[in-house]
Amino acid sequence: DTAVSQTPKYLVTQMGNDKSIKCEQNLGHDTMYWYKQDSKKFLKIMFSYNNKELIINETVPNRFSPKSPDKAHLNLHINSLELGDSAVYFCASSLSSGGYSDTQYFGPGTRLTVL
Amino acid sequence: AQSVTQLGSHVSVSEGALVLLRCNYSSSVPPYLFWYVQYPNQGLQLLLKYTSAATLVKGINGFEAEFKKSETSFHLTKPSAHMSDAAEYFCAVSYSSNTGKLIFGQGTTLQVKP
Image 1 (cartoon, chains in turn orange, yellow):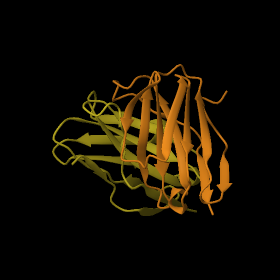
Image 2 (cartoon, rainbow over the protein chains, first blue to last red):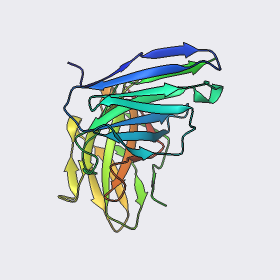
Image 3 (cartoon, rainbow over the protein chains, first blue to last red):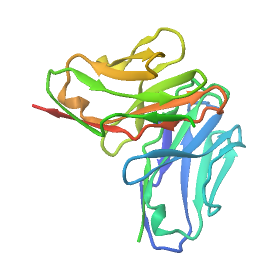
Image 4 (tube, rainbow over the protein chains, first blue to last red):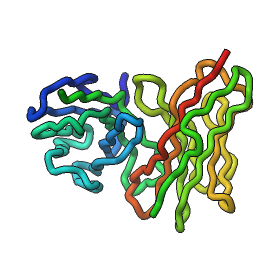
């Protein structure tokens, strides 16, 4: 049983396209996150949702839109893809957003390549 | 600004040697500190975390870290490196005021030579 799963694992697409990445967690956690890891392996938070409510929205282009249909799912939709969007995107979850000492559990990542 | 600095983007040790990966944080409020490991083409896995209980924290796979407030450090150590320890290691910090957001250091690649 995979605790945090992401689909697809690899995504190769052309500039200007729209794509989505899906994330699901079966841990019963209330909070989910999206992180971006760039080519230098630097990790930065993008968004977090607590029980379907947006909690963190970092300085991310509005071409990126997270959607949480329920607390077990957090999807990331990207419009008008650009070369600079190429990265590995990680989904994570934790028990609660107020639990700043809670462990975050990460998915395996989605490697997005924009050509 | 709250930040995390990992000294040394690349550390190389021989199998059986001591592993020391350095992490310093900057903060005016008490931090919660984490070490994560990322094996090639995988997600991040928690090694250990400091949450203001004991300052010496033991984690998985024989790793431990010590929180030193006076030095604003949380260095990761392992007495004897194994080949399987080769991976990317990330130090991260969270604060009570930031809704659980993790701020990561730039990562340290650990190479283990036979």
